[in-house]
Image (cartoon, rainbow, N blue to C red; front, side, top):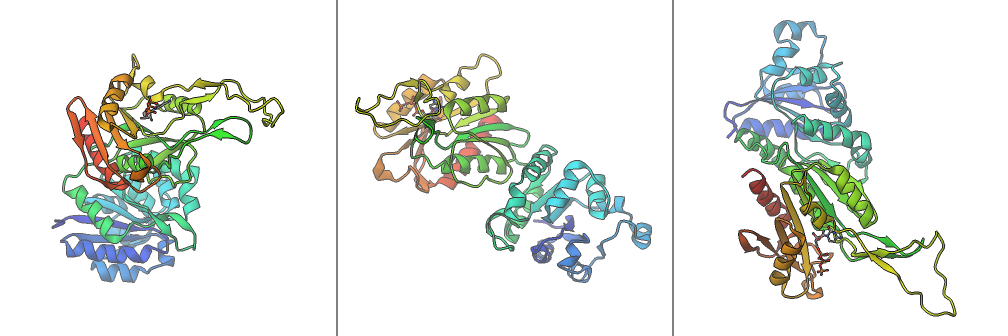
Length: 401
Ligand code: CTP
């Protein structure tokens, strides 16, 4: 699969650097040749000797090496490859790349290369979640850099969260995908996804809410990003990690969600997965908590929330080419969802049965029906992650049709 492919492997400074040695080996087993570049930080974890021994080639470490410049030169090094892979890609390397810095061998190669770059980030979860890192990821994605991982789980520092270097087989698969022409179908597309519940305050301590966990929406945002889309995820109050490569905007109420969605436009598609509360309090409580009183139970004077899906579907100009809604039904699922598609004016409805017995609300699996102008397609019960992947592919097919 990788016969004759030349891969320049830049190894950054992270505990996971040792996995790059295995990566080099697996790539060579598949017929690729690998040339290593080890950053000064990377040399704190593995040695140039181990890289050179494994790759059977020189391991490059210095920008200002008289010998290396005379024999190879950093520009040639950056061009004599079919793909440049950075694993582990540290926060520092990503920041340099996003900002075009070139003050050492790795960053100079990255600025000088005319080849595709694929990064496998690895860092502490807080470093990953930091706004600066997320900003850099957005920039890199916009620049067309491919990314694999990071995974979620136990990190070397003992913390748990996103930031684990992708597993070697996943890195190999991403590299093979690239060479098999697997240019990701949603590259260059911007998609807005809403997810989670909204909370509508009654007074400073109480609110109207619902049981949405946000899982399905987050999975969809992640799956779209994996297919190359730039994803803006407008999330209600949930405790979920942001999927890799996704820009997240946290909101609390339906009104905030609507304005965050409008601010995120223009977009090629909008996927409304959020369980938006239908109503909010007509007037606020002036910051005071409602008290029990002898006059009886207070009436909640409610007003309707903006319908974000309907608003997007009915936009006169700048409407996303594809607007997808979700229908959470407890009976006559297809019939009600078909009527909902008409009522809301969206292109596609993903319908599911959320009656308590199904365990879908808050659970990990889902069984959906896709309703569009092409009719109804019923999918088998799948994990929410697999529903997300299948839906992302369907969305890619529509957008690239
Ligand atoms: N939705 C939205 N804004 C709202 C309400 C719903 O964007 N204020 C979107 C949801 O994200 C979802 C779809 O509309 O995609 C679900 O609509 P739902 O709330 O089930 O529709 P209703 O018209 O409220 O229908 P029902 O009679 O079932 O409550």
